[in-house]
Every structure is written in C-alpha cells, then in structure tokens.
Image (cartoon, helix red, strand yellow):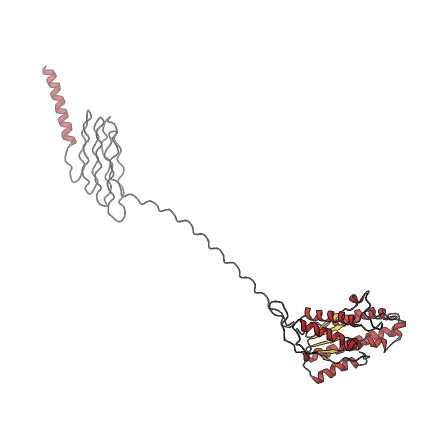
Length: 378
C-alpha cells in the first residue's frame, strides 16, 4: 500500500511539475516553455508578442490543444519557432500568424520554427509580401492611319474641260470659230457649216441665231495661196481666232492638174508633186496659225469621189495630208477627220464630186463629233 501511495504521489508530483512549467509567465513578451507532457496535457498558450514574437508553446503529449500564435509586434522581426518539439503528441493545427507590422516596408519574417509533432505556436507572421500585381495587358498598337486618297488630277486646262471630265461651256465665242476651204463647205449654201451649227445649238454650245465666221470660196486651191489667203482675211477682220474648221487641196488636182484623174499618183510623177505642194502649203498655213495663237484646227478630208480617177487620188493624198495634220500636237492641235467610211455604199454625191444634203449632214456629224470629243468650241 505504501508502494502504491508512493506511486500515486509521484504521479501527482509529476503532473504538478508539468503544469507549473507549461503555465510559466512570459518574460518581456517571451512565450512560456511548454511542459514535457507525459499524457495529453493542454498545450501552453503562446506568450503575447513583444518586440520579438514570442515562442510558440510546446504542444501537449497527446492531442494537446494547439497554442495560439503570438501576436506580431509592430514592424517587428518575426519570432523564432518554438525551441522544443512536443513528444509524440498529435500535431496541432498551425498557430495563427501574427498580424503584419505597420512599418512601411514589411518586416523580415523570422525563420519558421520547426513544427513540433504537437504543433508549436506559429512563428510570428512576417508582413505578407504584397502580391505581385498582374502585368497590364500590352496596349494594342495603334492602327496606322490609312493613307489619304490621291487627289484627282485636275482636268487639262488646254482642252477646256472641267474637273468632272465634261467640256466647259461658253469658253469660246462664235466669232472665234472660222471656216475656210473650197466648194465642199460651200455646197448647199454652206450645208456642212449649217448642220454643224445646228448640232452645236442642240448641245447648248451655240446660241440661237449665232453663227461661226465663214471665208470659204468654191474653186479655190491650197498651193497657189488662195485658201491660206482666206485665213489671212479672217485674221485681218478679227485676229482673235480660237478654232479653224477647214478642208482644201482637192482643187489642186481637179483644177490645178487634171491629168491626175486619168493617170493618178504615184504612177504620175506630176501628181505626186501636186499633192506634196498642196500638203506643204497647208503645213505652212497651220504653222502660221500656231504662231498667231490659234488653238485648234479641224481638217476634214474628202470622201472617195465617184468621178473617174477620183477615188485613187483621194486615197493617195489622204495619208500625206493626215501626217501633216497629226504632227501639230502642241500649242496648236490639229484633228484630222476621215469622211470616207460613211460614204461607202451611199449615193451621197450630187455630181460625183460634191456631197448632196445627206452627204453634208454626214460630214457635219463627223466634224461636230471631233469638236465634242476634244472639247473644241463647246
């Protein structure tokens, strides 16, 4: 019995001693030392944090209650972990970390204490490092500005067009348009000119009652200076001339060298000379017009006349006279009108040489179309 009492007393002393150690007071904020439990004594509570986090209380031997973490000091370095691990006890839950210090920069966390098997008080939590802010999405590159469309090129001033591509109206007065030539424009009392003027009025390019100036005379030739003289007369009457509408050279063969009808060029050398002389005289005339400031010449040539040898002479002279006209493309522009195609298969001659009314209308249409297409006297 004494032995059993001794055993019981020993046990009581052991428990008392464990309790005393576990509940020891903290020193300057230091945590009390956990008792070395034999059986599941309650874990000592962690001391309140001083300037240094208190040590966590050592867990009890069995299933001890986990000591709460010491309160973190303001801006303090985290306390070190508990120095002694509890023996054999069930690990307690990790003690709550101390609150972050108020210092501007977070205090350096103390080294984490080794968790006792019976959980030690958690080391005072260092001020949690701020989470890294997510990097902002890269701004999308600004779309490059689209290029401005090319300004439309202005319409050519020389042709008298507007920006819309249509001919400007009223830029040339009727007196600035002059007709010269032989019996072709004179046929039908000036039929080709009259039908051209009718088309101009219909298009709004010529006022009612207004007419172009005319100086053509039947039977006149080119190389002898008669047709060039008509231009001189017109210039003397009024030198302000913008456009000349003309023909010429036919009578240089019909009247000037009738042998060309029975023996056409190029076989007839004299006819070759006749054609070349007429073309050269026209070239000189157009050069003078250019010097005088005339802007446009509309040169309409003859259809294939039906008298003997007539068509062969027209076809021979056509490319020579056209080449002369076509070379004027600068200050003076010459537009050559081929009247042959519409006459093919038609009975549009009054005498095998001159156009009848239908032929005059056909030629006038060709002349007006050339004027309209090139914005001449619109």
